[in-house]
Image (cartoon, rainbow, N blue to C red; front, side):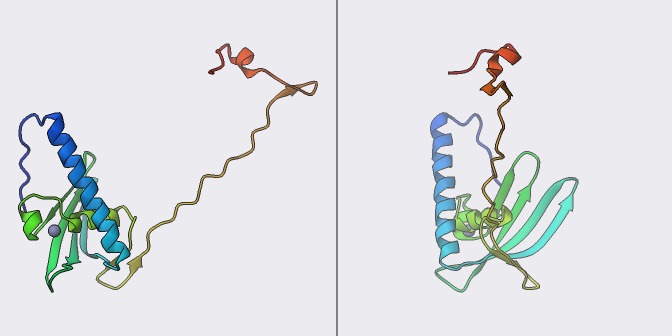
Length: 151
Ligand SMILES: [Zn+2]
């Protein structure tokens, strides 16, 4: 397991760089998922509200299987990967695809073969709102709440 060392007081440029690296990792993970890569969930443990998961992701360039750890706490989701890039602390797509699988945004499977399909959340249904009327005229609700109507 790699150790992530936070450098003191990251400046805005570092933050932007890190965000760009995260975006690249997630974008590549989506590409690999679309190409048929399905991460395998090896183990999950729950301790005191935190989730610790171990994933296996096949390499696209060799027969290697990379091991990704994911820790989901109240503060953050932190991942590590034992591939070359991951061991160097870089955000590889293996880490990205496990994060997406953890969030059920891409397909994944478990050791017993059960496959989790990404969830398609239905669009929220807008309930028709009946406006209050008095004598067939819609009541100006701003007058009822005493608040000014926003433009
Ligand atoms: Zn990796």
